[in-house]
Length: 323
Image (cartoon, rainbow, N blue to C red):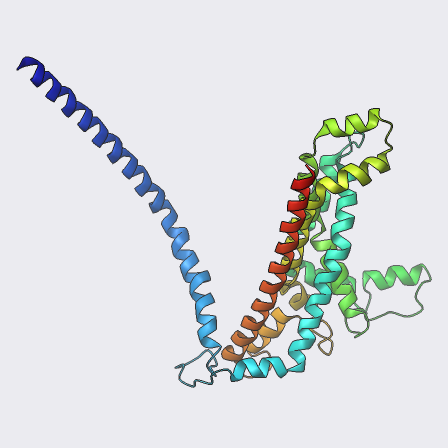
């Protein structure tokens, strides 16, 4: 009887300890969910709900004010697909994206290799200088660039005229021939630093012993770059290209603050096009039509993302097979 009571006491103590442990774990989980609740509410209110409702708005002729009672079905989508201004903005968006990817990514790689060189002094300071434009407010950058490339006493015109390269001021942002080029140049400069950081992160993961072995075998720096650095950075580079392309397809604040899509829609981007119709830039607000344009453009970006994602997967698989 005495041994039985002892067993019951030990069993009850163990059960109580287990219950306390479960209770403590439950309280910890509850605290975690409690701290996540504000972020979840913000996400549902300002991301998920507007995203879902944009699909609903796309089927209505709605100005954004008053009841949403005029159902038009697929008419907004049809109007979007036959609107030449939409396709002009679509073309400009992809020109901007292609230019940034083709110029930024390789130049950022070369600069990252230079900044990661052991013989370079003050590399941290250089990294900070190149990254400063990234953290500068884009709208302010656009406004400043309007003065720099302005036709009247703009910095660029003043410098080129003093050097004798121009005989008269050029309206860089007011000309159909040069406006998009200037927007692309500013975009390359503005977001160049983040691509450098991406490449530096990839270079930091490269094994040093391979380079030491190649140096012992008599490989030149160019041969090490060609046969070691480039193949090892292919998976990282594919991800960088994907991120660069998707991010560059969403350019609004820079274009809106620099040109507003002008002149004559020469720098119009799809984001600016959607904003113009949604908030009635010079005309009646058409939230339903703008939502339809956003949905169409969203599927286009989804297609681009899937294509680049497939490339990343294939290059990653090949890299894994080589290893």
